[in-house]
Amino acid sequence: MTLCFAAFIKILKICAKPKVHNKTLCEAVVKTVDEYTVIGTDDGHISRLMSCDNNLSPTGVIQPVRNTELSKISQGMNAFVLPHLKAEMVPQAILALQAMALSTAKDGVKIGSLSKAELAYKTIFDPSDFFADIFHFTATEIENKCGKKDIAEVTEEYVEGFDGNCITLEENKVLVTEELDITLDCEGFEAVFRKVDYDEALSLKNKNGISLYYLDISDSAFDYMALNEYLFDSVGVYVYSRTQIKDFEDRKKARSIGAKALRLMNNNRNPDDKKTGNDLAEMLLFTVMEGGLHAPKLLSKVEISTEAQKYKSKSDSVHLLKKKVNGETCYQLVFGASSISGNIIDAIDAAFEAVTEIKKGRTNERQMVESTLFNNTYDAETTERLKQIIIPSKHRNAVPDMAFGIFIGYTIDVTDDDNDRFRALAIEKMKDDIRNAIPYIEQKATELKLTMHSYYLYFLPFNDAENDKKLIMDELLGGAG
Image 1 (cartoon, rainbow, N blue to C red):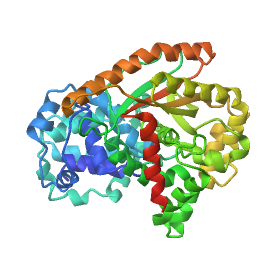
Image 2: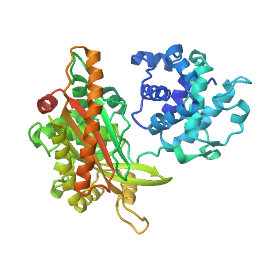
Image 3: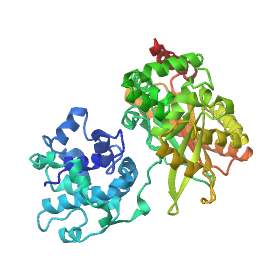
Image 4: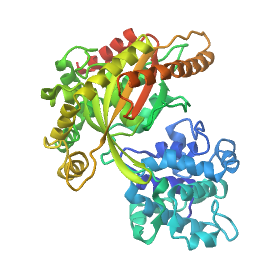
């Protein structure tokens, strides 16, 4: 069976988490060479690659792969590809790719860093390194069209037929999976929210992250059309729990989820009504926590303000983040605070005011989270797993740490009639804005005695934040009619 690029992606897709598509995986794999590498311009191009009708671009992909160190590609696999895969399926993916590589590679041809003999006897794998070797091999040694005759043979049955217990993984670099699936369409998230290359962080003791995003730019301004459509498509998973959504699906009512969710939001109160779930900042916080941080939702603001209203929570959402620190698995309950304001400092002040209130009521906030586990929010198996993580037990040494996810929207001060120039100026202005805000954020955390927590901050600029947030929510909630 021929191992070509399409077969590589197809095996990854078989082993991927729900709602991860071929396009997402193709883009993730080529990002391992360079974050800005583009594999194709439309879905049709991806489809032709996956059917082996097209080869990879010689200048766009193949030559950049040849010119990139395997160690860099491995780092990219760890950052961009492994988070999309089910951890329990990684061994099967490796074994299937190993078998196909051995049947495809000619004698004397290396599979990335490995000779054919080395690969044949290999039983201990670092997934990031191995996937890097396979990508290099399928991009530089095998024409994608060569796999056309047997691409259809790459099936779930084929992959699942391998015994993952036959090999050992070097797990120190594998990103562990979430206890819950992400509810959002992450492919759609990446298409709407453009991430700025930014690597600064807060000077605090615990892990933290700062992410900058911007929206499509048209006519020298941010264009909200794609954002509006994405929010409309996502409103069902924002409003309803996983069990409620499954109930809709079981009753063949999946198409009505969005309309019913919008009606519920309209019944809550008016658009832009903070603390009800109808505020754009609250909805975007949920979006970046799942789409950006990959921390699955426990409760959105709508659920907090309806199902859990008796707790009078100050959180704008709650998410579960699973990670490894020094080789040990640990969890964080990420409590959300959000604000959109014309002035970035005003937005930061409002968010930290909420963080302070959440911290003051931390016992109440944790009780709210625990209560959801007994409220048919999840299926029985998931409920039991979450109880073991979240609820104190004599069998577990520590409860999850409290962390904070913060979304900040603000008006950016950039003008230029040239689109490309506007885009470049906006990105640089964002970097300057956040760079200047970091000392202020650190000072706030210190003054409020909140430096012992992890912070995950997300920033998004608007043309006119105060007016735009109302217009966007007006348009969204108008879809209920």
